Image (tube, rainbow, N blue to C red; front, side, top):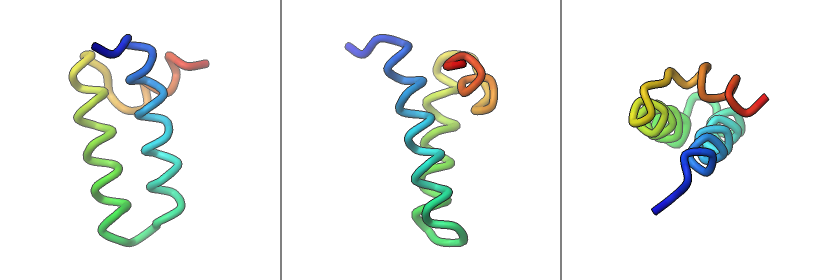
Length: 53
């Protein structure tokens, strides 16, 4: 079982991946997965990133 902080790092990494693959299917996949993981913790993606700061 992952620690919730691990999921925040995964969300961040997925956002970085999405930035590297703008306007591709990989961008959509990464953003959707990031949103799904953040939602599991009751957070929006932007809120998950702020939790890391």
